[in-house]
Image: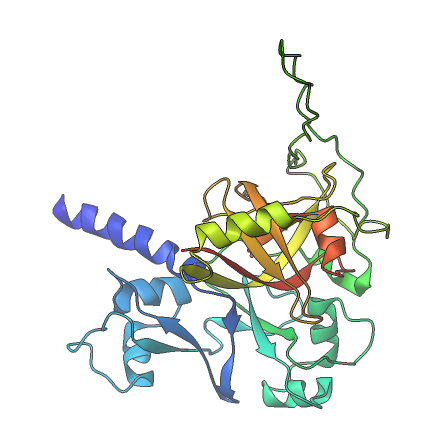
Length: 320
């Protein structure tokens, strides 16, 4: 009985390991590729083995430690990427593994550095229309294929750069407030609600270009400073995001899995340096099109950041 309980506990722990990490970034050179993992409370060789699909002894060997020594809290552990847990096939599924582009780096050089992955595969995974790369952008170079990682991203988002068009969904708004005696009626902006999604919904394409809202989100910026103590208590994340339709004007909203409702998140586009402040409404719906996302932004926020693709890379900071 005790063994069964321990087994279930270890399995649940390993299932959350990959999600707890920031976007997986490849390191090393072929054939010795790896990703880094910061050891957290309660983790051991076996939980990492389940999360990343690598035998415990291989993790120990890659880090030049023994199984008896165990893992130390806060240490940076190298997780090997091999044929058993890492795929670069065109139809690979799992958690995307990224490469950060350096200055003057070409798509061909990226291919050569990472097991000579076919150029067509890189173009397909990243929805590229050409071979140009921007410094400090992130490029998918393969997928971590482990059973405990988040659900795979659907291939319809990237195949031949033609994502399917999603029909606009209705937006829920608040009913007008009643008049109060002896007080002047004040107009209150309805809070934006996320679009209702269904399992059959196809991945969304970028909304049609329209002028960014004139009003600012200065109130949200002030709240962010209050919540983070002027930027002293901040948690950060980096990874892919997408958008949902909203009727909000001048304020931006977000769906996020770990920040509490009402938290103000600072969202930055690393390609142009633009940043906005968005209020968390709810968690991201658990659906295949949302696999691997760290945030969903209202369409106004996406436009203010200068995003033009349905799926984009961004950086987040919020109250820790």
